[in-house]
Length: 483
Figure 1 (tube, rainbow, N blue to C red):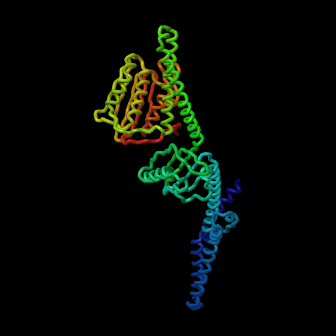
Figure 2: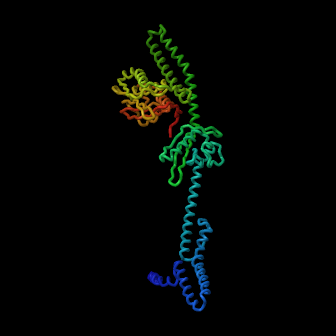
Figure 3: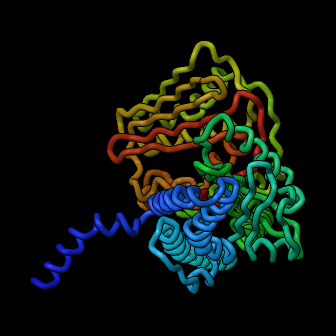
């Protein structure tokens, strides 16, 4: 260790002297070479004419520049010929310790690192392409001009499209006017607002070897260095919709088949009930009363099933016209008032004075209010309150129905609008219905282009909120759970 340190100290002390005779930088060498050339020219000019010495001096300077500048740059030229980032750059031998050699070595090291990064990026891109191609759901990438950049294998199989789709219009590829218009609208909004919310099309037809029903979700992806792109996720709901269609047909057929015999049973029971021979037989009267009551219940259940299937299939058309809000609420309250008095529940109404009418199907909307108010009274407590409020904003009329009843648990609130679902089977003792009431309410509201939501707290009460557009609108009913 001591000898090595001593040698290092000697080199450090001799470095200034060595640099005088053998400079380490190119400019120092050029300066020293030209100085030596001038010195010898001054000696030679004493013996030779100036016009003979001057060409010699110029040739000498060119040689100095060639040796000290042009030759060292050969390392950089070799890297350039190899393209900088190819495998051959590793095999280039760089000779010398001047600035050019050091630059060449730095470029060579940088090229090695860049080549590694490029290979890693290529590998990651290849993996992403494999994952993209293997995704079971459909994925489409669209640029900010509405041109398709890429589709995965699932979409290709659905559409029967196996050629290149790059730079084709989204309408040409997916053949959906609704989706194309929505994407154009989103692209226009992207330039004004970067916080574009994902858009959803609940039901979309894809034409291919087999017609498919899909749900589309469109998400805008922003980048600081590139223009935004749109990701379209397509979820295949064909089998689910086929199952829904089979179920609707089954309900419709069963309902029609059952309605006639149940009506006959009810009619004959009422006839037997009125026969003089059975008037004074209490047991027979009790049995017949049960038969009539159950027949009425089954008739109501079948009617509700027919309404639900009709709304879902679109066979029940809505007659949209002005609906007098005050008159409609009064009519509903009068209908439910006897039951409310019997239960000790007060029904209140609070309508914005500026709201005279809304545009709905009067018969269907009456059934919405009757179902909600009837449930609010049925599951209330003595001394409780049911309140109907009507308000408005710039685009919608808002109907609130509040009650101070028993409330709905959290685990049941999400399923409250499902067909045949009851929050608690023990509620039958309170006069529970078929479980179709809230499903009918939801379908009627959605058929008007509106939405219905529920807030509830056990022991405090529930609030149903209906949002109806001011402009008459008819939209598809959402038969499935949203994203």
